[in-house]
Image (cartoon, rainbow, N blue to C red; front, side):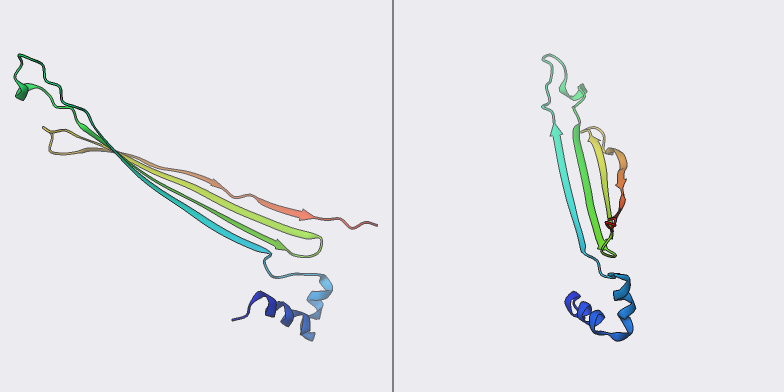
Amino acid sequence: MLSGHTLQNYLENNKYLEWIKEFNFNPLLSSLSFDANINRTFNSQRFRDIYLEGADSSNQIALPEIQQRNFLFDWNLSLSQNLSNSLRIDFSASTSKKRSQESVTGKQNSRARKQTLGMATQRNAPIDIWCKQRAI
C-alpha cells in the first residue's frame, strides 16, 4: 500500500507524468476528517397515586407512567484539496437526525399507547472554491 509520501515521490520521479507537474496539479487530498456523535436518552416518570378518602380505591383511575426515548445521531465530513498553487476546493457536509418516542402505560390498560415523533433531519453541504490571482 502506498502512503501519501511515497506516492508523491513516485509522481515527482516519473518522466511520463511530468506534464502533471507542468500544470501545477495536485491529485492528492490535503485533508480529510469525519466524526460522529450518538446520544441515547431514556426518561421514565411515574406520578404518585393519591386516593380520595371515603371513596372506593378500586373505582379511582390510576395515573399512567410516561416514558420518553430519544435517539440523536450527528455526523460531519470535511474534505479539502489544493488542486494547484492557485486553486483550492473545500467541501463539508453535516447531518443531524433525531428520533423520539413517547409511550403512556396505565395500570388498567394492558396496551401501551405509543407516539413516535419521527425523524427530524437537518442537512448542510456547502462547497467553497478558492482561487488566488497571480500578481502581474
